[in-house]
Length: 255
Image (cartoon, rainbow, N blue to C red; front, side):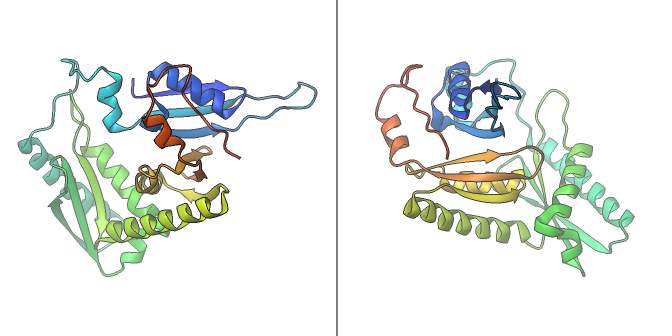
């Protein structure tokens, strides 16, 4: 189990329940707030808070006791990556042709062994990128769904890019995350970032996950959600210095 959805009277109670279910500490999961809940009037119309807690990749081994299971999907081989890369390149080229876009698609090897980058070059890049990269993400989703699935295991990660837009976007988001993180700590108030895609939220989560003074949470439903940057003192540092039990898992209410 790499994620769990739980409910509680408060968000903190729902998170606490999720941590107990997964058997991990707060700093090993990413929390998405699906519903903040509401008290209702005279007990009527009340709704519980609901969250989804997902294990970060390093925590997956921790949650399973650090042992590898024979049931785990087999790793993708370099030969399989090459075959899928060729198919992905042809598929994306066909999608662009059907869109009426004259472009070339170059396949590259990513930083990870099982990562395929499809770099598109065209006369009008803005149309292919779309607002905040939405068109780019849609093409990436289509290509992944068509060629990325592999029987018996997880396929390689396919990334569709337009002349290094992804890298520029990543750096912009990292700079924004650090700037807003400092603002949250300085003002001691939660900072909200509106309408981010899952990929953009992951960049901000990653940029701030090692800061012991901050916690990040996703809020809302659907593909585009708000992200909260919450100042929490040195709570995370204190957590790492004491043994983790079900009784001392600290969760602080976001305001």
